[in-house]
Length: 64
Image (cartoon, rainbow, N blue to C red; front, side):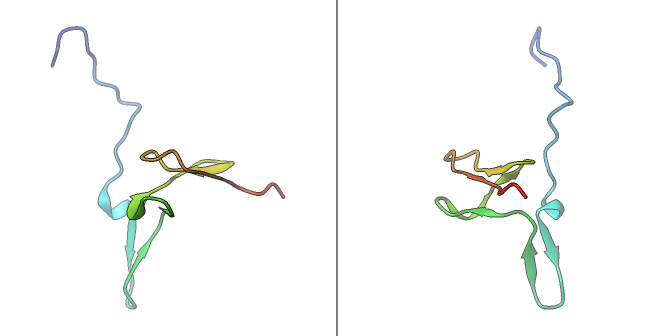
């Protein structure tokens, strides 16, 4: 490890089984994919929005 750098435990990488669900009818993606980047690029889900980290596309959720 480089001098002065500490491991950041706050950032956890998601494992591949957390993105997909396998059923009898096929594979279901758990997270939405980006409409600009295409399938395979997942969007981060927040309380009030979904956001693509690759291109910056954001969709805001409607307030009830």
